[in-house]
Image (cartoon, rainbow, N blue to C red; front, side, top):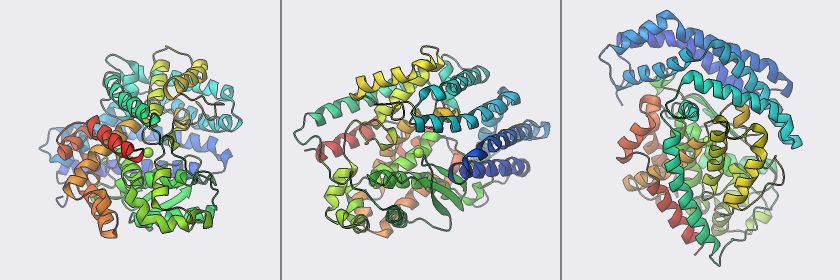
Length: 503
Ligand code: MG
């Protein structure tokens, strides 16, 4: 990449003006991270108020005449790719801020920060009725948001677009048909295999949390993390927050048994963190350091989680680290760990789902969200609809709403329209993996050395990470693989891997 990405004088002036927006946004992210990791629960109310106010401040800065004029002026200049993208990203944010009244933004922010506390409590007490009034408010606000933002055919499109530019119901209907077809067929063939289900003796083993922490840290070391730039903490829902190319935060949780859960979530969040850490340094403090495409972001976390962390070579390389969990764990070899981490079995909790059934969880959430936004079901119908869909699609029934419709944080955060990006990112990870293996060598040959892991990380930096939001998801996909997102890479990978495991 060239030195000095930003050369145009007006762009430089615009980026200078942007510094106040960047600083507020940077501190908001830190306050959000703190809210999940350290803040005492009762702090939520005033934290929510502060975040809501500072969000409206950001909106004011965006909508100032001077800032808009600079964007307009810069648009008429002869710009390079990075500079053009600054304008593209700013125009998109500006459009949203122009369409949403500040009173609405404030109300939305306050509602969702209160709702997260209510949701946590409802989930703990397994009482959907506690959360119901908040979810009703959030669905109403989301419908209003869709009207403010505008859409061509379906109000849900407007919400999808806020997480993945241009994503529509029309696209997803066709996409999920392909994806659920693959899942259903593969699951049917696995279930009819005499080796199904695989018995594992590791998932029920208890573990010591301090040892599990050491295991996660040693795996992060294996993945070549820099502990001066990355922190691993604990939160009730694992997540990552990128603050700059010098500071990424990730979290995991420790249940005390089923060690795969904490390990896969740590590797997953590492993938998100590495994406931000490997942006070009010049992108820091500019609009190009942002969650522009959530599908692209998720492809990075799912690449590490599935294509690295669930590969056979990974367990060969890291077996001794798992053995340090205790004598019970020493009884198992790399094959046992590989089988355990790749067990296919319909289950109730999305974040713990295997690679095959994962997409069914997303599909169910997509259908429910779309129905809510289109007034086809009411909020009070959510638990029943949820349970019926789990029964019909996965053949299992939640015992309660905690392991049913209360399990995810997203709706309480007002993130209706977010879930589909999880499936898209997972599918794209296979497309990336196929390209990476063609250009470098098979992951199974790269993993056994720290040089190989570095090669993988560098390849991702060069082809994806360095650019930040310079390119859209579609552009990255086309530049890198010569086509748009294609489910074929994913279905080939999945069929090959799991037919082999169960053969
Ligand atoms: Mg993720």
